[in-house]
Length: 373
Image (cartoon, rainbow, N blue to C red; front, top):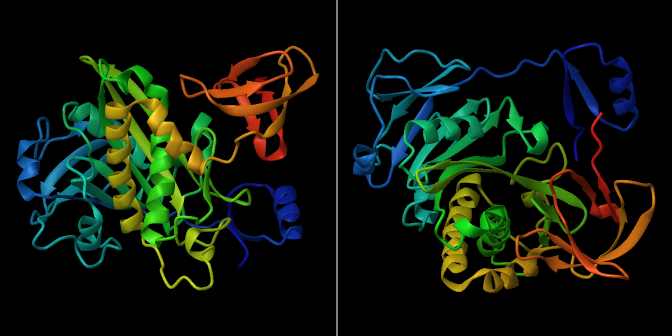
């Protein structure tokens, strides 16, 4: 694997020298690519006309504003961090050949009824999560618009951590409305678990390798065995007229060998299949729709049987560091509780550990509180 390239834009000489000793390549003053226009397409085409809140030629949404225009309009302004101009395309022509996204392959793979039928692709953007939030604000009654980026300049992970977003990584988000009176609406913490299973199942299905060791590190990370992190999940939500409005995002290392490892580099030697980001996104959306229907119609216990097929932690022994002392207690991970939180067993009792406010170093056999200065 070739050295990872880091961007050094300020005086970080000590860090740079340390990374060089570890074999990393440092590139100073690397230019961040310019933001690009968005390209919007629906299947079927007339879906765009039924979207309540979508307006042509007017700024809608917020942070960034969204400006929808016909692709034939020659006077579309340049994109900025505050405004994303979006060119609306038709199925017959698809996206321009200059875009590194194959809409034909994407829609051939997509089998959903709703999610992903409306697709917004941006070659370079700040973060798809912000675009999806703006779409949710502008069109709160429209469900399942999927935003895909080729490259993100400001990808965000959990707790505000920066998300590395190189080309070859499947970077996508979508808005998803959940009725609060539904079974899933009463168990909203399971939504990120459903997406995690969907990603793993999608990759195994595409490869036709049911035993390919892609796994879930609770609560929201995707791993190859216990060796390499391949992806992660992020969800934000708000209430609107009896619905939980979720913006669900994921990043999956598909064909980017840097900064760590990717799926296509980890395939068995006798596997002649290579995955594309188009297939991974579309298949993941198929599986997400499948597992949300399963959860709603069959309940959490049926879903969890599928979840445990992919997770890393059954009967794993870890140390629990209590928040009020440095004492570490040995506990065994038994599974997930009724709310989707980690259930562990000590010598005295069984109890749950929340992901909020804890740092989980389960790969090192340690769960400890997260302290804030």
